[in-house]
Image (tube, rainbow, N blue to C red):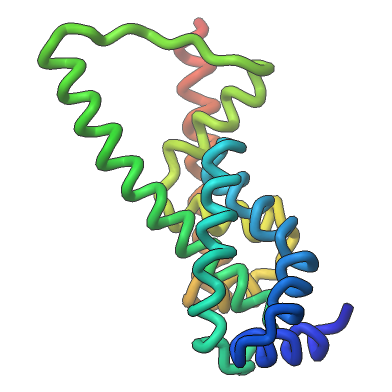
Length: 182
């Protein structure tokens, strides 16, 4: 599989070739799901997101102009879709929380999984959308800062600065956790 093959398939799929579209999905569904799962932190939501992205690709492929690698463009599509999903969920959760608080129904929910996994999800959940997407693309997906910058629409220096901010936040949280344990 080469970038040129992806570009040819994307062009053919945009022109209505169902076989080319199917092959693109076969090649890249794993990437779509994986990035969605890492950003959203929930497998069920990632499955829904992946399905939405795949359905949306039918019309979005026309906007792929070949100026960047197909996978770079696809990362951008998935990250943007995940951001949109998080915004919708945030609004929904805020409305639900207001309802729960007004009715006095709030209860503490217990998490599942290892403590480290829970802690990591909590930390990622506290990051802004921009920082979370940057961490996932660079650390989880292994992209170079320049590639992540193209996907996120920012400079390579901004990606580096964002990662520095995340490290700083993690150090601060770790220090606060130690203080609270004493």
